[in-house]
Image 1 (cartoon, one colour):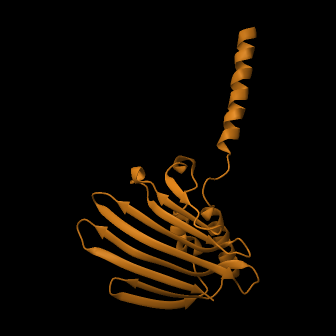
Image 2 (spheres, rainbow, N blue to C red):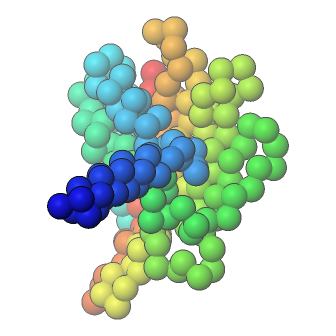
Image 3 (tube, rainbow, N blue to C red):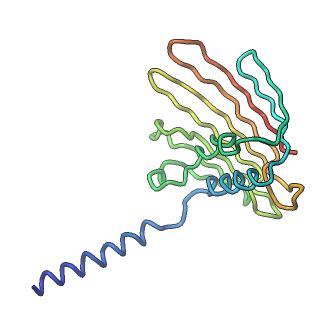
Length: 187
């Protein structure tokens, strides 16, 4: 009985220690947290957005307040590399105190996010620009997306998204590549 109680206490304390280790500080800049905060703010304030989309030869322009921001900024949430499984997958460069640059290591070629750069504003320390390259490739499908999110002071007095751009191509093995270019300006 004494050994069973000792074993039970050992397992209990080991489990607590493991939980503490899992809650370590993020290795990379918290892009997901910033983008989710922007999705929430934009969904509440409903600013006017001027958007231009080009899919192949077709071009479309629109200006609207009714934008599904979760869907519109979805690729930026996919650029999140702050996951425990990815802790050793990217090289980290700090060209200056306001720039974080993450590049996928050559040994990790199957991951989607190939590069991510976050530039902070010198006064607010908020992201001024987030830029990423996402690549998906298998024997049936290939896509490459270059995404850019620019932020700055907004009319409501805070800091928020001012401009975004998504460009690249999608290619199914049975068809031609389909280029796209979507650009939005938040007014």
